[in-house]
Each structure stands twice: as C-alpha cells, then as structure tokens.
Length: 349
Ligand code: RIB
Ligand code: CA
Image 1: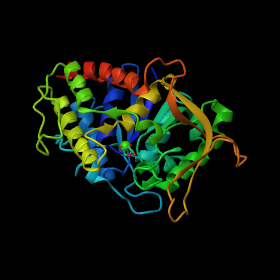
Image 2 (image 1 turned 180 degrees about the vertical axis):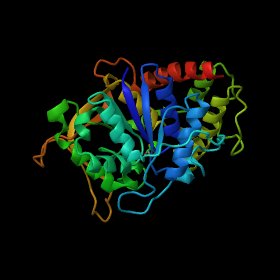
Image 3 (image 1 turned 90 degrees about the vertical axis):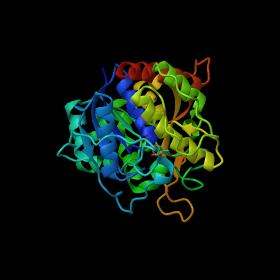
C-alpha cells in the first residue's frame, strides 16, 4: 500500500483528485499540504479539511502552507474555481484543526516517516515543496516517486500565452524544485513525472461523463447543459455528487465563457492517477528549467530533450498513453476514475 502525500491548491479539480485518492483502496494518504493558488492558503486548508470530513476521513492530517509564493505576491483564481475554490458547492465548516506544523514540515515529516516509500503528488504551485527542500535537501532521495501537475511542453499556456497556472503563481519555487531533483535519478532511478497542459488538456470532462459518474454512484441526475440557468444547483440524491456537480458547474461555466466549450480539464485527477500508476502513460526524460526573467516568458517551463544544456535530466514529461494501450488515454482514465470514485461515493451515500 503506497504512502501518498498530496500537495493541493484545492480548487475544483484538486477536489476531484483528492476524491480519487480516497477512493483508491491501495492508497495510504498520510498527509495533505494546503498551498495558496486557486484560492488563499487558509481557504485551501479549509476546503481540504471539509472535503475529508464529507468523505468520512477527518483523521488525515492537513497542514497549512505559506500564505505567499516565495518571492512575488499571490495571485488567485476565484474567477475559475469560485469565491471559495469549490465552485458553487458550499461545505460545512470542518471540525478537525490543521496540524500545528506547517506544510513544508509536513512534507519532511511524511518523507522521513516513509523513507524511500513516499509517493508525492503536487497539483498546485510548488511553494511549500520548495520550502521543504530548502529545509531538508535530502528530500529528493527520500521520495519513491514525485508527480507534478504543472507546466506546458510544446503547447500553449493557460495563464499567459506560454505559462501554466501552477508555475505562473510561483515560478521561483518551480525552478528550485526542478533544480533540486536534478541529481535524484542517480539515487532512485525514478525522475519526477511532470503532467503538463500538453497532456492534461486532453483529459476533458463533459456533462455526459459526469452523468456516468452520478449513475455509478447510484444517483440519477439531470445532465448539465449550457442552457441551464447559471448557478443551477444539483438535485442529485447523493450529497457528494451534489458537491461535485455544484463545483463542476462553475468550472464548466468558466470554460464556456472562455469559448472552450461547456467542459472541464481534469488536470489534477489525471496527475493523481499517474501517481498511483505510472504505467498508464509514456514519459520522456528531459531537463526542465523555468524562465524567471523573460519580459514575455517569465514562468514558462523550458524542456531540453536533446541535451543542449549538457545537464542531466531532472524530469520525465508525460507525452501520451501507455505504449501498448489500445484505447485513448482519456477513455482509460475516465473508466478508471468512474469505477473507483463511483463505487466510493455510492458507499458514502
Ligand atoms: O493549470 C491547471 C492547474 O492550475 C490545476 O492544478 C488547477 O487546479 C490549477 O491549480
Ligand atoms: Ca490545482
């Protein structure tokens, strides 16, 4: 049973990633870091604790992260994820308190409690992971695996023409994390797996797929439509499906306003699935660095595949499905997601 530590900036898709981890029987979720990004660190921390309580897992420790990125003011995304980060969903105040230690310490404690065994997942800015690396430079050798949702490779950005949100919010932190994992392969053989927009924007959740999840959870719900009134609340019988549908509707409406369609990209749940089963994907070794000074390109992830820089690879960029796959990656992912989360939500209803 792999010990997993998840660093989230819970937001809508982070919430789906958390549910996927909780729904995966093989996972021992040993801790959660709450990183400022989609919303403030305090709001992320509240969302994480409230979701855990809703899912019947209040005992999982949640730690509060830095309120600010390493060196620039925080930028949040309430327009995308809603005022509280969970779209239209409103969760009861959590009763469990966050840990007394902060998120950086939580990373270190989890890694030292599970040396060589901990699977780390980051689905938000890397602020707290960078702070943990500063405090404990041995961290890269202590992790069994690290999976990062972030960056964009041979593909456009979603926050500027060339930057992806998680990196854009704290580019200095991302640069420090990629640099720190440069020597890791010598010790563990595994490079951090990086799920950029180039792959996560192929994981497209539609109202029809969300309806499949509701059915798997044993609740019939109307299939959402862009013709619905804005902010229509879910009438699903299952309380967790109601939360997911209310959260997702805000995300669908955002992408619809952007002209991308009434849909959502499941960036973070996909990264969670890769963290639990890297055999799902094909990844290519690369040396990744982050542009910190470009007038137009600050926050851009730059990947050297051909060895131009003469530096060892520090990551493996996810570029597609498994070599032997006979079905599209998104199809494989959604079948697994619905199978796991649907059964999990049905049990909780
Ligand atoms: O760019 C997508 C990423 O930014 C996702 O992790 C989403 O939750 C936001 O944090
Ligand atoms: Ca996120």
